[in-house]
Amino acid sequence: MKPASFTYHAPATIDEAVALLGEHAPDDGRILAGGQSLVPTMAFRLARPGHLVDINGVAGLDRVERVGNDLVIGACVRHAAFHEPVLDGPLGAYLSRVVRDIAHYPIRQRGTFCGSVAHADPASEWCAVVALLDATIVAQSTRGERLIPVAEFFQGVMTTSLEEDELLRDIRLPIPAGDTRFGFCEFNRRAGDFAIAMAAVSYREENGVIADPHIAIGGAEDRARRIAEAEQALAGKSPGPDAFAAAADAAATAVDPMEDHATSAQYRRDLVRTLTRRALEQATQ
Amino acid sequence: MTEDIKKDITLSLNGRDYQLTVDPRWTLADVIREHCNQTGTHIGCEHGVCGACTVLVDGDPIRSCLMFGVQADSKAIRTVEGLAKDGKFHPLQEAFMESHALQCGFCTPGFLMLAAGVLEKDPAISDEDLEDILSSNLCRCTGYVNIVKAVQTVRDKMGRDQKRSA
Image (cartoon, rainbow over all chains, first blue to last red; front, side, top):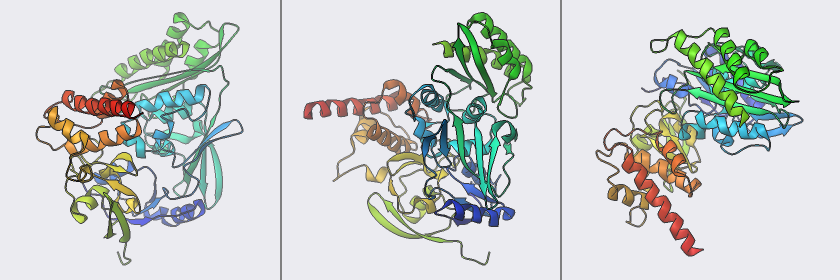
């Protein structure tokens, strides 16, 4: 249970960090941010990086701030930063609601928002949230900056379109309209465990009917994504049990659930139905 | 490996500075135990699940098995050895004894540091939030009821003392 040997680098600037990453990526050089996923995999020797570039000392990466109509979250912003709303309005309240389901309190003191997205565990709550909000992932390397729409970012279980020499520098969440309603619901057998499935939803009401519905499912498939079929079942409908049941059915039909030794695809499909409905009910409150 | 990968750090542990040369792969838990000889911090699962190794880093309760010692350079680390002051136990230590919140004692240092960190950050924490936070550490002897009770006792006493002095 001891990590293998590696060379440690502690850059002070983003330029230094991406230069080090570019130099050592071919040697399995990796970024170390919160370390709450990377260090356990190193302890199990599932990962044996030759170099770690620790970005905790890089100036400016711990900022979460509003820029224009985006909430920009830097690579070293901890989960715990969201315990209290980081901005007024429904998005800040929503992030502080979702963060409570992420692992446990001591893990949230170190783990980072961007690290969770870069790690791309399908059961990551933030992965579902960035999918829900159509976030933009900002990657930086010595070759420059690259903006990646979230729909092109997740490629599969713990696989993303980040190149090996790219640092996930920040994530831009579009700030939704002030009357946007949000819901989030996940299921796991014990609090703090990895979720077996989760639903993140949002919509607005215009003239008594649902406008701009978003439904993202995480934990069920190999990556978090929006489910267009479920959103279509909501658009233009009156918010209530009929529309919510139709959207929940559509989501359960559309997903292609993973299976493992403890959980069948059918069980995950049933969870998606129930969690989508509950998340939508939560959004009405 | 030809280059020397070890790093010189200053670890501030319970107010005392340790000048150390550390291998980057050593976790903070190992550095505290093996190189500062403070063995009150226990190592259980070594992958962040059990919470036995919980310590405070700049006031935040964290898993010391999921942080490398080299990352703790110039940070203020507090462990269970730093709780008692002037030969007197910390109120949490007193409450754990009075409430029978420990049996074998293996998980106790982690619970104490978790609770100490949480009460310093949020002295008026709700019962619900406290239970949620304490559920992050594993105890396999006494169960959690007495641990929760002990921490609630200290929270309530701190609250009363604050009102009295206000």
